[in-house]
Length: 118
Image (cartoon, rainbow, N blue to C red):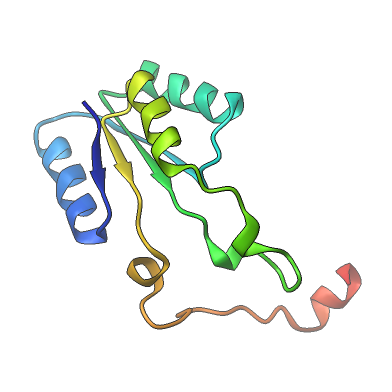
């Protein structure tokens, strides 16, 4: 049975407990809308690790200006059902607020180096 966790502290505790029990933990991060590529990563983690953790987090920092964060497909319940049938034990589904609090904590300004890529 898959366990859904949405807080960072609960996820840290669950992973720490597995490690204390001498288990290996594999992590497959996703933004959901799972497809065969994600499932192949899950299978690889299941082959190599005792416990497989997946995240489903549509990360707003991965979207640039003008890219449609709001329209990114979100099928969390379907994704969790798929992961459960593939052997995933834990799925981490944090909110943006859980991950970032009241705002982005780190920004990077690459300066003139980035001008080449504009």
